[in-house]
Length: 358
Ligand SMILES: C[S@@+](CC[C@H](N)C(=O)[O-])C[C@H]1O[C@@H](n2cnc3c(N)ncnc32)[C@H](O)[C@@H]1O
Image 1 (tube, rainbow, N blue to C red):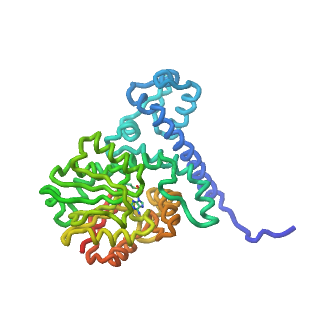
Image 2: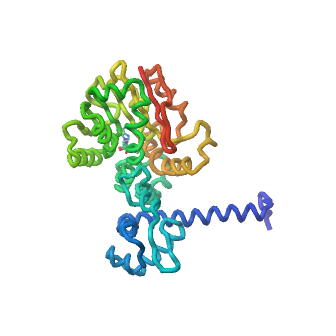
Image 3: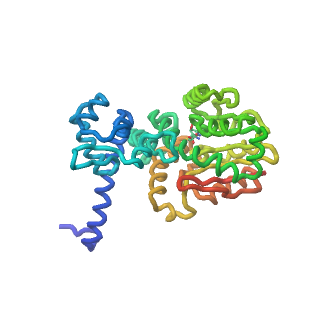
């Protein structure tokens, strides 16, 4: 009989603690799929609108099958996403659960994350193959729920912080926007950031650019729905070929690290920026060292990055910065693109805000 290559001594307590973590993750992963279904089927909103419901009542209200709903509720109450009262046999939602899972206007809304998880699950076969063969997967090739989920996931943070904290943190930009300025939002996706700024600064003009045509069509529809088509123009364009110039502010919201050529994008930003303008680079929160990412936020962004952000850039044989790129990496690219000033001006638990100036 051959000997094992390594003899490992197992500490039972440490093993049990580790297995406990793994089982928690099994449950969390499966619950994320069920949360996506709860959002799609209106189960959370029906429950949030009630004083408490039995599985049968929830099924009737949502026109769904009671047997599935009963099982779904068991999973959700186990994960503490809904509340169960053993005395009445009814399920309900605590205020915090209801806001975080049903109120899309709230800064605490987290529903978008479940759309992203669902879409990432569908990307797995392609990305597994890319691990072996190289290449990657372009943004536009993903399950469309990624585009919806990204908008839903990031918009609450933009609503809470963009106008109140991030813009005032930049050099003289708030005053310019109030007076009437010209803004580029590169990699704008569904345009949430442009629309939030357009509402806050009615004297300014906004131009959203993205190379994903479907996202631009959605962004235009959003602008029309919100009556902002006069102040926001959405254009299908690659970051390195942005039209117009003399922008007072050029923004990259959660997208520079995704790009095949982030240096080319920043060089173009430098070219189209007015001399005293600012580039605002909004990036996922990440550490300056590898180990500073070992927390729930770093774990989440590194996961999405493997399945999406890094894969988009790898598909283009690009820089593949990834969602956890360090501040120093952005500083170096900004300097190479010609910017002489670079600093972190704000941050939230999910985002770092950098300003680059000529
Ligand atoms: C993670 S999404 C962020 C979307 C949006 N800024 C937001 O915060 O909701 C990244 C976006 O960057 C866009 N993108 C990636 N590479 C691009 C490029 N080279 N030029 C223009 N847009 C690009 C993608 O199409 C996608 O819409």
